[in-house]
Length: 228
Image (cartoon, rainbow, N blue to C red; front, side, top):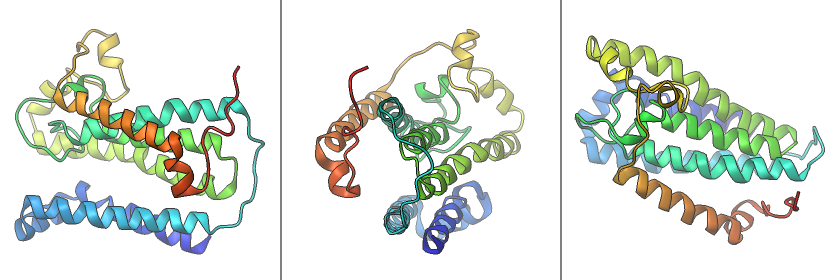
């Protein structure tokens, strides 16, 4: 468990860098924007691999009994989370996490102005429900808490960074997914990044369900699923 906690701490510290404009700006100035994102992505993958490696080596301590409905939550939440993360990363979004810059907000922002964080939280919470053991509570609970806790921090930083334009940009979206659409402050639409995210999330999901998840994590997500 000690190694898992260390790996999680390293992951959380690493993913705090994009929310620190001073440090992020120095790294981009020194490395260049393309090299920064390439290096950051590589290190993130390595650290994430360490997190899962450490989790798989923790003793299994059950907390609740598995049930088919729990697996269905994962099968719905995880692909949706992957879609939001990918759409958020590849869409222009001055209000939250994104790897693209530009003036026109991406279509995914009409759903929520924090798609990456909501997607990561959905993925984590979906896995937490279906894995009723202590290591999963620490692992996925930590991921979800980090993602949801980061929303308020990014809100404050966006207000300071954008100044007077923040209110105008924020009026056409919402923190809570679909709230702006329900209140008719925004209209649901799509664009190329959303289409790419949908296709990529679908391909990734089919690969994982077809054996990829079992090969990587020694667990088949479909074993627990039975018809209602």
